[in-house]
Image 1 (cartoon, rainbow, N blue to C red):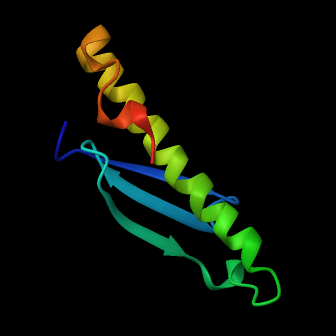
Image 2 (cartoon, helix red, strand yellow):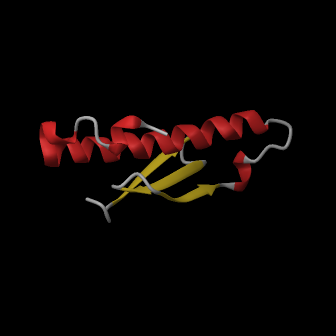
Length: 79
């Protein structure tokens, strides 16, 4: 699981995040149309949502593979 990557997205794919099973964030991609200089707060919200989506997927896979052993692990703690 440590080297497995999980993709998350927000805003209909305007922002995507990729993280490893260890919780390491390895990539964030922002489409140009998501970058409105007049509304940087929304862009920040999209980045957070994409990272959380990837984290949720990683947590689900960890739970599926390890069951109760995964409870309280590093990914369950959040950022």
